[in-house]
Each structure stands twice: as C-alpha cells, then as structure tokens.
Amino acid sequence: MLESINLSSLPAFLLILVRVTSFFVTVPIFSYKNIPNHFKIGCSFFLAWIMYYTISIPEIVLDETFILLVFKEAIVGLFLGLIAYMILAALQVAGGFIDFQMGFAIANVIDPQTGAQSPLTGQYFYTIALLFLLVVNGHHLLIDGIFYSYQTVPLDAFIPFGNEAFSELITQTMSRMFLIAFQMAIPVVGCLFLVDVALGIIARTVPQLNVFVVGLPLKILVSFIVLLPFLGLYAGLVKNLFGITLQTMRSLLEIFGGA
Image 1: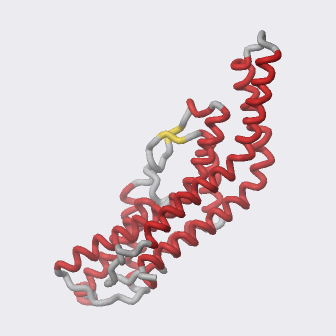
Image 2: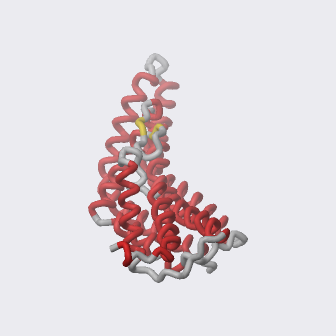
Image 3: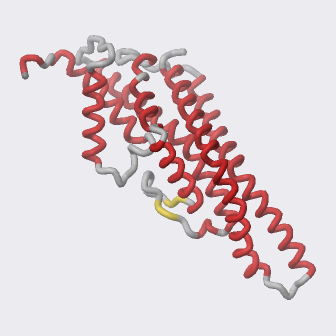
C-alpha cells in the first residue's frame, strides 16, 4: 500500500485540501459553529482525496512558489464560500428591516453560523431557506462549485489581482444583496408604514388614547397577517436567490481565472 503512494503528488493534494477546507470555513451550512470541527476536517480531507483522483493534477514543486500557491488556494476557497453567504445574508437583512418595524429588534437570537445576534424574522427566513436548500440538494451544487472551480482556476495558476472586475463584482453583489432584502421586506414594511400613519392620525384626533400601548401589538398582528400569504411566495424567492448565488460564484471563478 505504501509503495503505491506517489509522494511527488503530495504538494498537489495539499493545495486541493487547502481550497476545500477554506471553502468549508465560509460556505453556508458547512461552516456552522455547531458542526464539530473534526467533522469539517474529515469531510474536507475525504472530498479532497476524491477530487485528487478526478481532476488533472499538474506537477507541483515544493519551493518558494508553493507558499504563494497555498495562499492563492485559501483565497479562492474563502471567497467562494463568502460570496455564497453574502447573497443568502439578504434573508437576514430583510428580516432585520421587518423586525425593526415590528418592534422585534430588541429581541434577537444567536446566529449559529457567526455567533452574533441575528433578528428573529431574519433567522426564521434563513432557517427555512437552508432547509429548502437541503431538500432540493442545493448543498450538492455548492460542492459542485468547488469541484468545477479547478477547470477555471487550476492548481498552478495565480489570481490576477490587478483585475478591476473583482472589486466591481463585490460591489455589485453587496448592492444586489441589499436590493433583494429591500424587495423582500417592502410588503411588510410598507403595511407597517401605513399603520404608523394611521396611528399618528388617531393620536391627533384622540389624544386620550395611548398609541404606544396599542401600536406595538397592532403592528405585530398586521405583520403576521401580511407574512402568512407572503410565505407562499417565499419558496420561489429562495429558488431565485439560489440561482443568483450560483451565478455569482461562477462569475467570481471566471474573474479568478483571468476572464
């Protein structure tokens, strides 16, 4: 068994392992803090071992260039997972907009992925999206993304850091994330704005009525009434969101490949 191991190909395997492990650090689902680290390392190792026998392996030499290739592989894996998380973060941003109008902004929950506080509605949207992602085997598409990345960014190739398209892609991704979040939150936020206008009119016409006591439960009730029919359209929105995520990952790989 030991005689069949080609030690000259060990640097190439290490580069594959670095990219896959870096990808699992930031990509949704796999990067959750409640997933044990040894499980992530094990999945990364066996996935890298499978990919080692399925992709074309160039000759990699252990020299000063190898250190630069290790940093390049880490950057590719981290940015691929991060760009996927940035698009899906639109769900939490939309929930933050809704919670701020509902009055739920004072009651946040802990996001298991980042360990930071997250809005209630945003975490609810995000959990449904991840469950939908698992049901339709979307996590397989994410793994396909890191697998086919070697066709665009080979192991022995470097990233063209002088390409201005990279900064443009990050800017467009951020703006698209906030645009999607605003479009998802506008039905509820718009209705709550009308409720605020109505409460303001009532406060002027009936000064004896305490609108702060009546307004909070009324806004929560209106939010739930608007959210119920909205959940029926939520699956379609999440599907389009996944399509945008995969398209953005593909565009990032093309930029890293020098396109």
